[in-house]
Length: 160
Image (cartoon, rainbow, N blue to C red; front, side, top):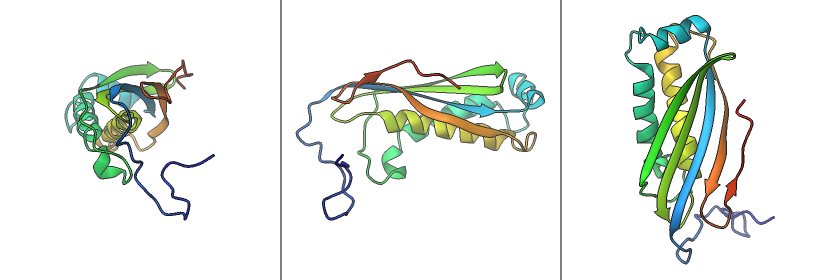
């Protein structure tokens, strides 16, 4: 298998997408942050002293999705047409499931944008709740679906 970001001599390179066709690209990613039940209740009741946890996490995830090219050195700058982040409380296991969908009309995919949105949203939850819960764990960040381009894949993935 030939890796697209490595030249024959071993040097790193940004993939040349000059001749790739522009098309609608969509990617959905998810992740989970395990949180103790008592701390989860504080989040649900908006009682965390730093403020509304999920609103802040959504804002952080959205901002991060637009800055992937600044975080990951071989990615292209993509002008997203949409990014949405959703949260779902879970009782067993106790925590928050995070799902992000990124979209663009471009010549390369938006998987990293969706994955970054999930990761930064989870990190923001962790940061805001860490004083109440020292045992949180961020898990299972993964790509669920990619549409557009030659590497499209649509599949149902076990969430946890």
